Image (cartoon, rainbow, N blue to C red):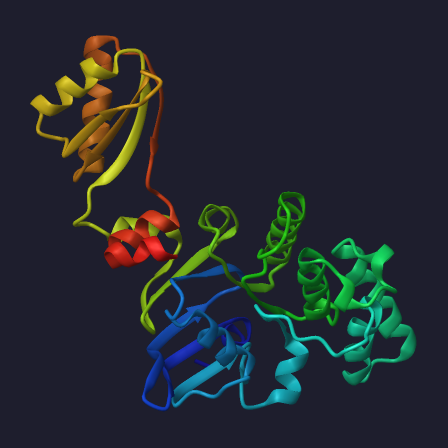
Length: 318
């Protein structure tokens, strides 16, 4: 792929990476558009390897990678376009939060004035202005996580790669970080996020990439990925005034695999292999019986459920 379109995409073309005889990722073909993309998979599935390949920290054993039209073997230009927040801490000793960010901007070749301005903006974004003159070594886990975010984005990269960025953040800081990721995605940045906190992945993701044992097993918007899992019953939660009556009627029409009453007595959790047919049947039952339905919603239209469908028991280790 070449031209203007490729300059807004991250692409993997038949990419494999081996560590000796150990598989990192294998035969990966991806096209990642701007927005928030979440990498999902258990430890050892290939998430960090995929991120390290995007940043040029490691090279593929075979295949080609392009980031906004640039080769990952062009570090000078790549580093100006990419920001990376690694999962594990590794700070130069003795630096304050301000110095940690400022020094890297100077390495980029920015002037003192520009480096100072961007450092203060980055610290303000993550709420660390008051702690800027404290040594990073004295920061709490959550503060260290936030200063890494600031350092990774201070040069305003178009691609932001975040490996487990929510680890160690308290609920308020986590909510603020998520809002920031969403904001970056809306502005047309690539935000690549690896996270084990799956309900938050659901909330922020424009698309997901599901990995298992070094292979990409599914990709796309989570709803479209779920729609491709045709051989697995879909779970639907119906809240209505007479759930037992509804369950009995649905079973007579052979539309259910399973039905369970919700603990509050006003909901029915259904499993059906024909969701479209179920919705049509439900409409007919409501018209014929006068059943009062409060809500109807998929109960498993999320990353965790889809991953468990695709991988089986391994999904529980995410």
